[in-house]
Length: 89
Image (cartoon, rainbow, N blue to C red; front, side):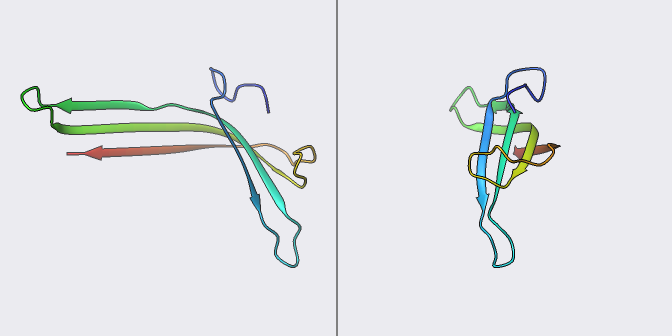
């Protein structure tokens, strides 16, 4: 999972464990991504207060489910996107 998932180097890594129920073994999820933040703020020059703001946060993810903690026994990679958008007025 070292190659970039997009047009720039990966800048987001996540590993988490899904603890087993009695019928399933523990599962580990490893993900890499390119995440960017685009921020637009409108600020009052008189008093410095924020008039409005907008954040766009797209994340391009490549994720694998693994059966061992060393992340060497993994299934096929899955790609997906996360898009967070926040606005204040």
